[in-house]
Image: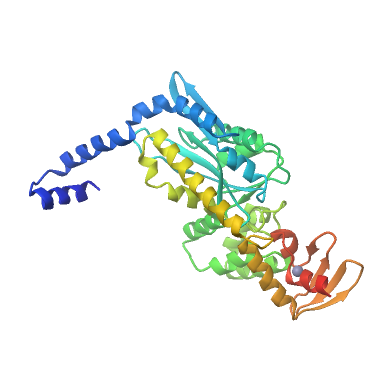
Length: 364
Ligand SMILES: [Zn+2]
């Protein structure tokens, strides 16, 4: 940015300034607009207090050590309320702040009914370690309360695993598929296993998972051993002990972090204000969109359901009970239980909407 300013001054006034001088002027001007880093940390407690006063249901927390800032946490009231209607899967991740004081932001992000990012909670901490993640998770627990069948997806950093085992002992913790595939590429110096690994990780049926895993095993036993050692339940949809609704990566949290790329160099209160403003704008736009939506489901899932219904026209269902069907599809077929909302293809129970087999059975 300083280079652009330098160029503009030269073009407009014919004056040549050194890069250093322009950079110092730029910093001075920005400090007039955003405040200084030091002043921002000083006013953080009162800023958080006012934020809580003006946002019903918002939860904030502030921790100091020897009179110095250590941690803070915030979760907007609308995020806390809205998460109750989202799938109970939270992607957690961290990212670095870019000021001279360092620090990291921890965040928990869900997906809303239309598969849009739904940020739930944020923490600003000194660094990613056992204590900071435990602090974040205990505040998160207060923010979201008891949530049935809660699941987490992360890069399974040791501190995240430790914090979840301590604070959310009943929640399942899945590994991010993207991180695992990156680890395999880095460890084994190969990059041609993506399709097989992807197919195995995202398979809903155990039989499909094993068909793909056997291919990996026969091509490279060392990679298969590495993946097996990690535990199928950590990275495979078919073996995951809870229901992660095929949310297989923590990239959603990373996506939000990327949106804060520039703001992470702002003074702390300006940075938090940026997040608040961003969420407020998103949620406002989505409310307007939802008010205009006439379908029962959100557009993303309405379209999936319509596509499934189209497929269902070509399937042949045979009733085997009052609510059970055996459905021929020319491939692996499906056994549907409409009462328990399950099908052997896995789509009904994992994604949570009827698969083509279930639709063909219910239309019979
Ligand atoms: Zn099915």
